[in-house]
Length: 80
Image (tube, rainbow, N blue to C red; front, top):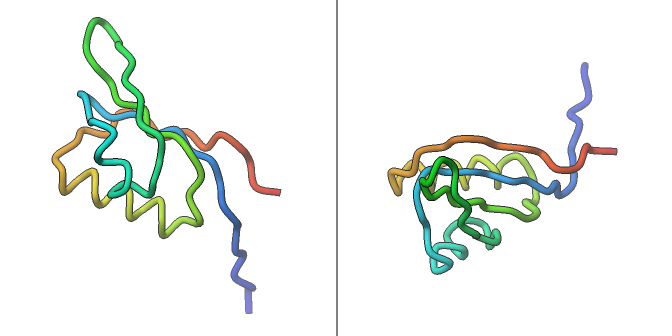
């Protein structure tokens, strides 16, 4: 039997098209939200730690429910 490998919190940067205001932070795993611009178009960057893969998928589900267009997901730190 292959053991299940569990990881602790990891830091992510998630970019979505458009502007999400900071009021959405609580819905999105308490990630920090900031707006940057690409080709003069707003992009919201969500950054911070999430407890595990389930929390990451929860953020994806909430973004989908909000109609946000996912542009990029980066894991900032590698697991040990």
